Image (cartoon, rainbow, N blue to C red):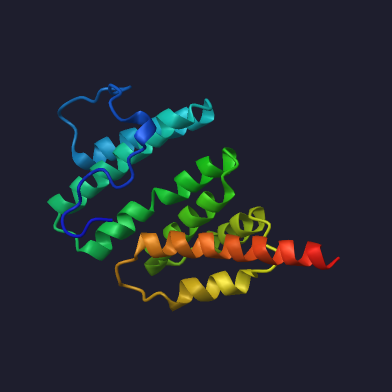
Length: 183
């Protein structure tokens, strides 16, 4: 991720670059209402199984949330918290696509980014998404501990978070392979 001002393409899908807008907006809307509009379009696209369109809409939602946050002079941590709210829905879409590791990353990002307002469903969803990854040699407590160690109110390094999820997966695969070779 680039340092400095948000570039607008942090979460853009390369598969959708260059495509025309699928649903134009009225010009009178605010950045916040535009974000909500794109969230609704994304949800509709997910229900219809149009995942590439949904991904594009979720990214437009994120872009408009960022613009709204900048207009309102949010701090970087507040901007990231607003951005993280979209990751719960991205995780759901990725779950439907069978991309469990990516879904776990997004659930973790959502939990970490919105933990200033603890929700009961944080732990419920973490457990469900963790279980879908079928880790045999990583336990949920390790993941919860990792989340808890990250400082609340600090900007999250999303690349490090994604790398950690991949590291758990690689470790689990390696241990499975060693176990099968020993049997």
